[in-house]
Length: 139
Image 1: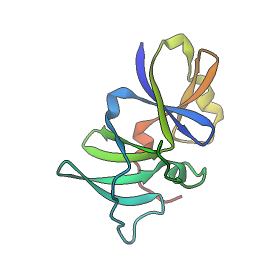
Image 2: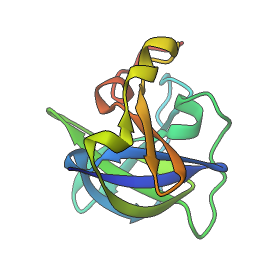
Image 3: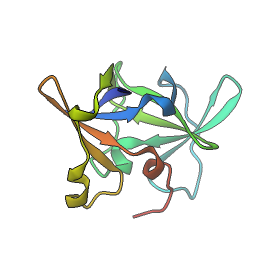
């Protein structure tokens, strides 16, 4: 079983392996930084740590975040990289068994961050790969 945090970007549901998730925060002041990729919203001071904040909608090329009462920042850590991802809302934490996870689709997808599809209780949830989300090259 793998635990995943499920969140929404628009009408679609996405998931990240919870092992990379440190916390989920409400929107806080974000300081813009010049000459960064367009999907980098800026920096946030979270309990004394300065964390780069990524607009996940913009990073995945599906629009730009509109902040609402449901908007959250998923604070994540991958190796030594700590990042915050802006999402429209978080849904739940799910336990996914290997038979609910369909990874073979990734060979047919032209999207590096795609890690597969989770078929969970009739919901199709797109699994994202953290190692691809932390890359900073501009497309």
